[in-house]
Length: 406
Ligand SMILES: Nc1ncnc2c1ncn2[C@@H]1O[C@H](COP(=O)(O)OP(=O)(O)OP(=O)(O)O)[C@@H](O)[C@H]1O
Ligand SMILES: [Mg+2]
Image (cartoon, rainbow, N blue to C red; front, top):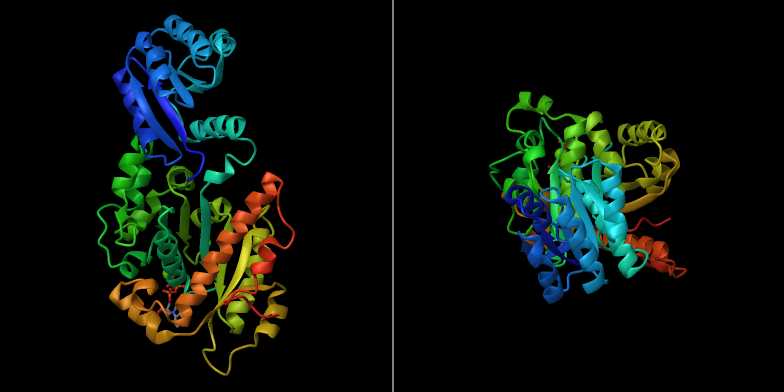
């Protein structure tokens, strides 16, 4: 991951220092260079380790803390100071900023606030786009009806992304009643979404990663609850918080949604950058796509994120043609996945992802090029935000294998 920020922390209180340290340790956007429990020693630590950011927690002695910030401005002007305090005293905040602090964070530190502060510091240091270079790519996979192949796609997409060493990927099973992502991955999880949601306020990144199930591909799975009645224990607010925490610690998050389009599914759709809506070429499916798109229209920004994925192309001669389907849906087909029942059933029953079970199968290739296309779009989007998008960019790439022919 580019633009990793090197940090040093000073906090005389073991409790708050450890809490902050645990939060930082799980983030792959920062590297904890040094920690210190005494204000007196921190200037030396900074002088020796030359971190990008010095985190100064001032509650135990604000006066000493402010002096240290001033001292740091002289001895390490390149080091951005981030102050942490539970005080809401405007005078103290002003003094800290005048002493040279770049950011002031309220204690207890919230992950989102920390991330935004790190983003601003990164942008100031590396220029525009610093925040984007490390943002998490969130892909929600949903279906036009039951059994269209959304879990098959979500699981295999996630495994393919995990195969790239630079990626860290988490898959969340949000089909809280009947989700089966754990079966596809042949895993027996210790913890589920309910455990994580219920302990969200106490979780740091290290604990979070320990609560997830790690698959041999490197993919992390957050499965649905074991008991049906536990599904009601996860509120939309809990899920928002869980997704926020996951976003902060992974480069990619794949969300496998339920087919009920409930409040939790809507949280997932809102947090996604891409929504892959899986359909097949039959009338009930296509009708549902139209209905879903009408409902998505009601939520700002949702419709534009949707990419239609037609699964099981070539299933039987009675299928509606791609051209007719496109007309019916009033939307372009983004990708086609071929019908390959034998391979897909083997993959599911053996609990082995496509890249291991059938690396050369056309369905594997189609999902693999879909992954490339999504990645290229992300790169193009980032370039555009950085102001150096080249015309043609990812559009040129869209002649890719699984891409729908017009
Ligand atoms: N491209 C494909 N070709 C043939 N069979 C497929 C294909 N994709 C998925 N399937 C099969 O379709 C069935 C349903 O797939 P899957 O469980 O992924 O769908 P789903 O949309 O997640 O279902 P649910 O609504 O139960 O969550 C499985 O038996 C799977 O093996
Ligand atoms: Mg499913």
